[in-house]
Length: 114
View 1 (cartoon, rainbow, N blue to C red):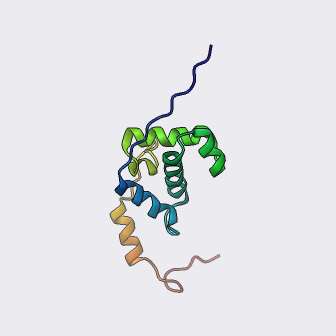
View 2 (cartoon, one colour):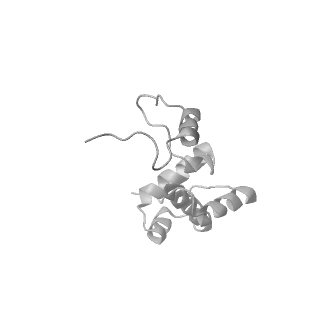
């Protein structure tokens, strides 16, 4: 006989809830981070993967993974993507910043001839 599913207790502080609320209202934040923040906030209100998924238009397993990641790493680190396997990038973030600072301005620089 099947058992009832246990609701996962996701405890967050007021500061974390406030940070997640700010992220959900952000227009410059990555869409995946905003969506995950909405999932966590909605799950705090009603701890049901299915209800949250239906409300946000996502799959219940997506909500479940997001909540489980928040339990493992914390609510704010759970918004970021986990590292993917593969070769590390050769260009460091500092080098990318320098390219932005010293980058070629629009209308200047070299042009490739056809």
